[in-house]
Image (cartoon, rainbow, N blue to C red):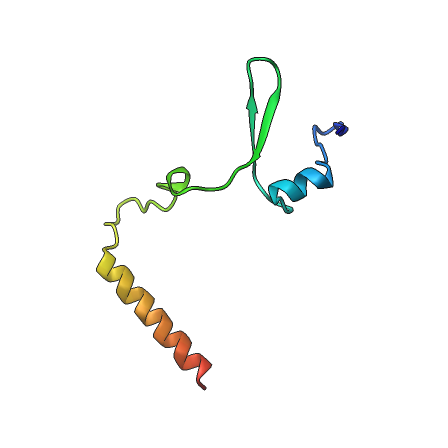
Length: 85
């Protein structure tokens, strides 16, 4: 399959590739340049390890499991009250 590089460095991936990788507009891609000069392309699916620390809150203590549970319970109770009106 061929694709053309634009003057802005953009390439439109062929539909067959987008479909096979499950790519949509805004999807992230991971490119790996291999020693033989070929490029490996894959969908950059986020893993827990890759996003670890993204939500760090400097100067604030971590939220405990109990506090998370309380927050979820409170949210669901409010949501249920709104839906039952």
